[in-house]
Length: 184
View 1 (cartoon, rainbow, N blue to C red):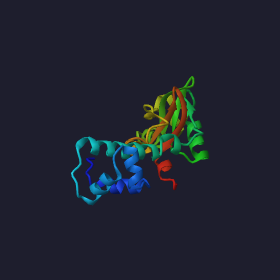
View 2 (view 1 turned 90 degrees about the horizontal axis):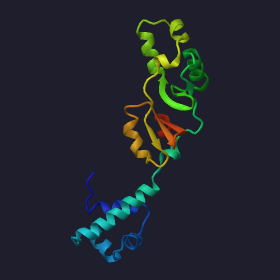
View 3 (view 1 turned 180 degrees about the horizontal axis):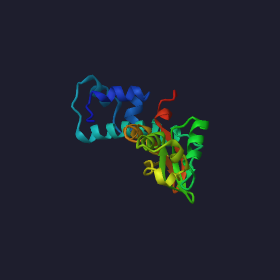
């Protein structure tokens, strides 16, 4: 997205800043901000960049992070578990996907979608339910850290049903589409 001078006033107001606040934080004068917003001046490139950098830093600081929107109590399943156990967990907890672990490490994912896909491959539910999760699992969900801006998760969730939030190698939480749709 390319920013234009006319965006300064809108961005400043969204952040709840006065012209004086923005000027002080950007290292420019309040009168320069007023003239830019009124369209009466064409500021230097360096002053413009200073203002936009300040606005973008403040937007990032004020935006929600993955750690803010994640569900902390992540249900997971062991790779050697039976599919029947996964189905029961999903039903009991009203979830549609979960990470698959082996010795505490994330090794894959399982979802209603992959289970249905196995059923549609002419495999009966009875046969599917006795298989091990590692036989039907898919690759792991994408992983991000807790400081990742939540806005960056939106395009990822167009392709993946969940995103794992990691704290080093430890799983700290999970973000699904439903988590982003929660009211503030």
